[in-house]
Image 1: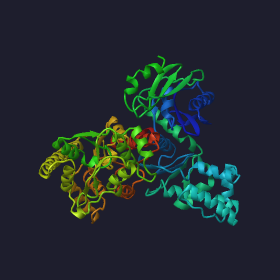
Image 2: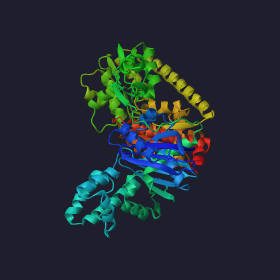
Image 3: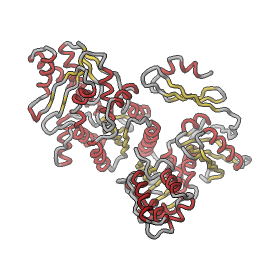
Image 4: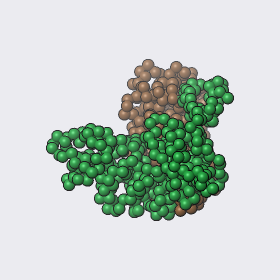
Length: 324
Length: 310
């Protein structure tokens, strides 16, 4: 049997899973909507992966999680690696493009830039208080203009004269958009202007003050939009590489990190019949009123978190809320 | 007579001095508890939207104290010396509190070196409001001042010792009232300590030394006293740490300028910038802390991941 490693990336919108072999090659993968239920999404991802994986040849010896539900799923699955998405994306990308210096990422609700030197993350930035210029903005504008996201890029690429759209702020961009439409700009010019606005917003926001060096890799849902890729290339004056597996980089990253672990543990892909439950409880023992999350597997407590102090455990609430 | 002291904003610059002064005069002081959700809620409810999060927290502390003491001590401190100005939010605190809680009994005196209102004068004034003679107040102030200086010198010496030790270290560049606040900085600092990363503080530096360093480096005096202090601390300790952590509350005028400056002058070290506002977004902070720690550890400890990826 050959050893294989599982990585799962549970994001706000989609859940991704990959299994890699010793050579960091993806031998099974799955990409599904999270639909607000991360545990179910992971069950479905694992079911698809176990269908695709040649279990007579490979054995999963370690699993890892990343993404916003990494802790919950990490506990539920008994993952050996629970890693934040920045490190996971960097490691995953390095496995595919070893010489990468800059990783641009625009996802559904966040955007980030990661700077790499000699295979080590040197610096990164994420959007702070504002989510302007992320994927959700593009998709809501596509809806406004009555366009499918898939047609968006083709239409934008057809424009020879992109409209100038304010790039600072989503609210201003939207009113600008309406204004340009009323002035008589064609849909193609407006859509092209939007793609350009996303790029300028990104570079002025998370990319501010960062030295972007080639090779540049562009990831996240928005990287599937060829018009945005072209605008990045125009603006940066360098080629921007988009990997067909770009959406899997976070999952690939944790899988690679699993491979680097010294210890191995038996990992069961078939979890369809296991009942995972989470119980949120407001502690209420002090004015902080922490929201404590308890994770149960078939009624048995796996872990709990969210409390700022020990009062929750000491108060008796803990024992009464969780069947032992 | 119980004197209440809000555990927020200027308290963190003058904690030892204030408590010792009232102790020396024999007055009981009531310190509001470390910031909790209830205090935050009260502060937000009683503040205008545009105020910075730290000053909203201050107002919450004032409300908490109203029924627990006879007087709430809120001096109006405009500067610490000529051309060492505090932020307008800080020197407006007395007036802000007075207008927010018109019925409250506040204990106030003004410090403004431009009008020769020194710190010592202010404490004599406080004494006379409390019915204490000038000489007794002056003596109490001098003793309290010396005690606070000694305590600060001790903290600085301890920090310098820590910076000489092995292991990963970060420098926290953040106003004292954010760094040491239970709701803002405490969990961030706790995260580093739990991960065996030693934490040094840019504000732990002798005032004069900080002013001198900041002035030498930037050619002229920095207008804001607290920013000058932090810049001095950054210049002094930067070479001894592995990374710099900026913690700001939203919105902060001085920080919007100086955090940018720090990022630009700290090219050789990773910098993490965290902005805290009243929307509780601890998941985002957690991700940023984890990835920053990864960077520090990878840079500090070798290239395990690099090998794994290739």
